[in-house]
Length: 292
Picture 1 (cartoon, one colour):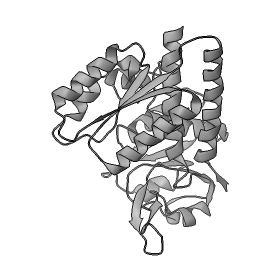
Picture 2 (tube, one colour):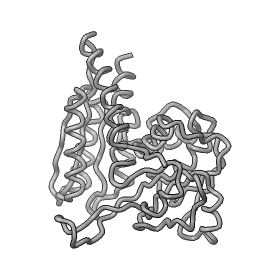
Picture 3 (spheres, rainbow, N blue to C red):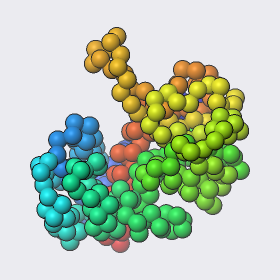
């Protein structure tokens, strides 16, 4: 069994990005600038955004963090987005999700300039992704493709089962892996909460991408020998034996499934670190477009 180490791979990608940024600086070209807007005080979101800011510093990016209060109106948020859309110093920006209930998430995502949408959530970028045109691929699916590529996991002609149909992970993964690309050319089955005989389907899979948000859902009796497992889920589970009172688990029962897998991502340390690395990669792409 080979562990698909997202922590190490993301560090490698950041080093590659840092070298490219250093080259941009030596050639007196614009260096990437990523901005993030966060509304409210959600603990997980704050931690994630702060990690993005630190990652920017590490690779030599400029970064801007815009913190807005929980009671910020939709109009005020749209105004902040409009300012970033026309700011020539900003190459890409994200609006951290989730947003407070009184703000229409879809309306906000639609307001972002597609050329600065480094999260890859705007319908223009989703459409280009579906047509296999150059665009920003959302960071988590992009990170999964990169992990499979760097560990030389063969996808061509393989049976892939994606569990979960979210717009952020499941749906784009099913499209990307079916496309004619280096990490692609697979036969993909997209499963979800209404799928019948799921175990029957997963037992035929060469590669399983679990992204449904149910802790330790995928068990050993649901997978065949030498399967490749990509675990996107991460959930806090109460554990009195831990100092923090909880442990982090994925959508896969790691201990039992890893005994049958040829490749598997750990949780934490698998897909998660790749997400920030690929956000940086998208921002570098946006900057290079502006420099060209």
